[in-house]
Image 1 (tube, rainbow over the protein chains, first blue to last red):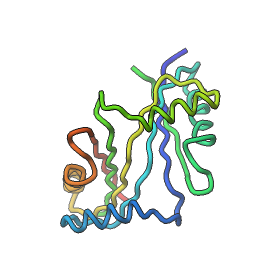
Image 2: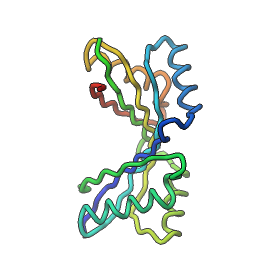
Image 3: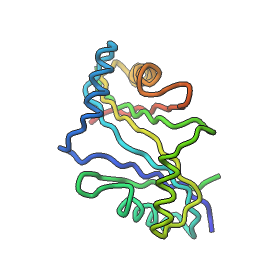
Length: 84
Length: 84
């Protein structure tokens, strides 16, 4: 067993309205910042012990499917690195 | 001017309690997943037009300082890539 950290990034699908990001973008503009667009996402860093990186990625992907992401409105991606 | 996307990741500082992450970790365990730890973070992807990547990173860092992160409880990091 090796220790891995799987990072699951959960984003709204293209076309799904994101009022929180909209509000954040407007607030930055009111502070004088110039920006073209802003998207927000949730990021989960999960420490998993697994036999190899593929197994860790599979388990993190299943966690995303079952709980972390809502497949109707979210896309997600998984990255795995070995933990020090 | 070139188009860049700056990704600002905002994390709770080490030692700051994260009840949402705690709840998510327990929910995953109730679903039968094994994990050692779970940390959550906010991720902002900001499209910025700037003269170079350093300027884009500086502006994104300033956005984090002024609005996206609360320096009392958050750490943040900024990554910049050129936008296609």
